[in-house]
Structures are given as C-alpha cells and as structure tokens.
Image (cartoon, rainbow, N blue to C red; front, side):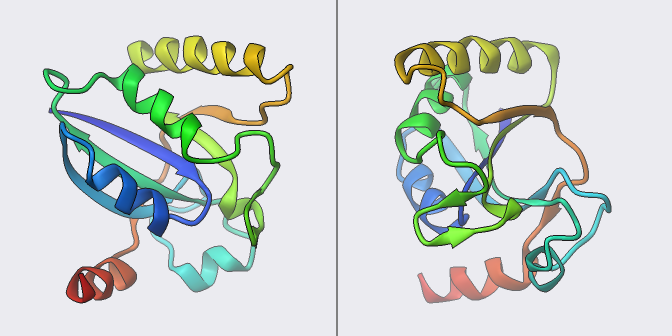
Length: 147
C-alpha cells in the first residue's frame, strides 16, 4: 500500500473521482503544507495557515501506479490557474503534489514536465515534501454519512 497526497482545488470533487478508480483503496480529505500540524476549515479559509485542501489516497501499487495517479490528477483539474479552481479562489485551492519520498518526487517532476511541455509552460503546480497533513475530520464524517 502506498499513499499519494494531492491538492487540486476544493477536495470534494476530486475525492469522489479518485474513490471510483480501481486500485484506490481509501480516500480522505484534509489539509497539507501549512504552518501547523492541526487546522480547521475555518482557519484555512482565512488564508493565514498556508494549508491547501488535499485528497489523501491509499492505493495498491500493484493495480495503479503513482505515475498513473498523477496523470489523472492533471486531467481532472486545471494546473494552469494560480490559487483557484473553477469558482473557488484562495491559496487553499492551489495545485500541488505533496511527495512522501524521493521516488515520488522524481515521478512528480517527470509527469509535471510532460504536462508543462504540452501546455506551453503554463503549469503552476508545485511539488513539495508533505508537511503538516491534517485530516478534515469535521467535514469528512458528515460527508460520509450523506453518501
């Protein structure tokens, strides 16, 4: 089992899309990249925490590769818009790949380069070491109850 942590705008839509992909064992919404190890949606929305809304994916690498997940990541959001996706604006809606190890970092750099070349160097997606991941427990539980 491996983990991928991806920021691609509001976390609800991507969480649903990734949950339907074969090889994705579990999804969880949360926040990552911020100044503290714990945060809330209200705090993130102030723009002062530096957290991004993320989807954490537990996946079976025998069924789906990290590279394939990143290719899907770039297909289901616009990596050329800075701090926004659709109607959502703010640093929490940025495009960012949070890697857990050097192998993920190298794969992310390779895939980002391919996409950036195809999109005429307009990609604003960041690649960063995972930092201060915090599950969005207050929203995730409510959401799962509605499913």
